[in-house]
Length: 289
Image 1: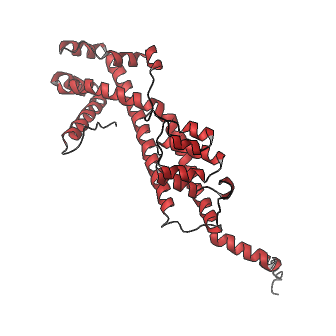
Image 2: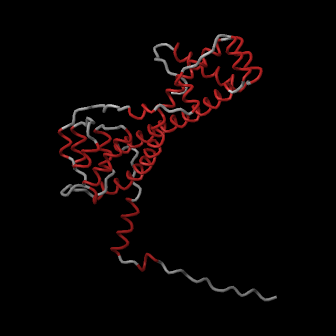
Image 3: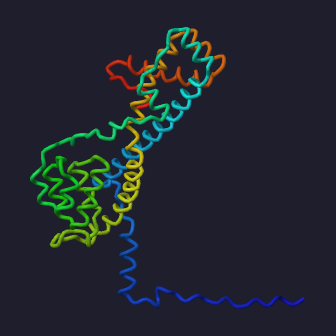
């Protein structure tokens, strides 16, 4: 038998040979500087720490929201059971906090919409006048360090507005955070006359990716924060009721026999709150905060 005929291999054209020396040098430069080592960069560490803080904050608010919903469903189920209400009456529990009952029934006090929360710092900072008008308006009433203002002055007006929104969303007005955001600012978003070297520009591109992920966390936090305070308030108010119920032997025995999951939830809430309150040199911290 004859040997099979094998088609000769066709050599691929070398792209590097077809490129000019200047193009090859530019490609090597871009490849070398595309992913700079930021392990020891201070601004990188600040942005990473802020991202970790916001991620933990968002996770805590989500956990509080889930626990609040579970607690409301639990109370609604128990209070709709006539047998449980009868047991409560026999043990002397004939009333509940009015605000908690209104919350469970979906009644919203019209006056709550008219409550005005004062700013943390009522007086305006004259140093904000060094920023663009819109950025100064966003940060009005907040106290910024002088070095934070200096860092923001090195940015363009549009970038100042972005940074002002990020500071407000994260409640972080420190000079270190402002400098880190300046380091993540590309050349075209810096103030006119602010000189940026090639190495700084490459680092800004790398830091901007961290800032983008941080910005997404700010958006999530902004969606959860409006109801977070109410969730904590009603959990604290309901926790006082749960503590009284679990301390009563007849009530907890009845719950364990008919609603074991609900009883376990109430006991866990009470035990964790009591353990945190008795811990040495620690302030009272309920399990849902």
